[in-house]
Image (cartoon, rainbow, N blue to C red; front, top):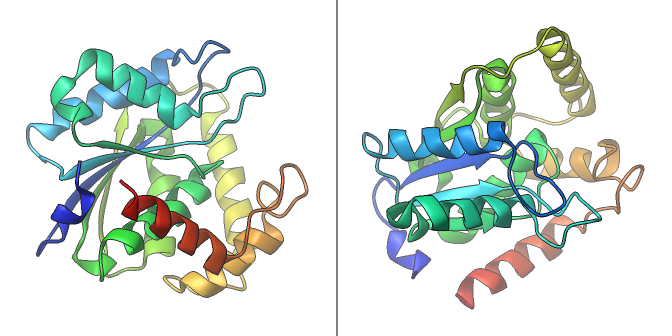
Length: 217
């Protein structure tokens, strides 16, 4: 697929956020439901491409969860498979938004012209909307949709806690300002600053590597 064919007036992109998979790279029901929703909505919102998000978070599985989602799409939705791409740098919702933006920067001159739909679970819609709005900026068109049926007794509490942690981590950054956002991600977020997982590379290195990989497609 020549992704650079997608430079147009108003590109449409669907972003699918992952949940979990097992050691064999098989998706759990929640991740599958999100892909199924993306496929259903594609008949109304036909995307120029479908971005699948998620890193290799399991040490007992060689696949990234983005690749696991791609395998499922290949087996179930041949039409979507032609437009699916994997973004395997993100480790959580914040990373999904940051690396989605970097991916779009590598493809499009102006992210404000991109029309985005983000697919997740219903209990996660509110937080995902706020995170994506903050990181991509208010000029971007972002709609978040959620699959029902996966919330639990602690879902609302966990979402409030995660949103509070997000606001604290990025309190010194400005909405839509990629430099300040990435600085806080790399220096204040425990999933990316080396506290829990290896520290991510600096912004210029990641951007260059991503653009190089896209040009090789």
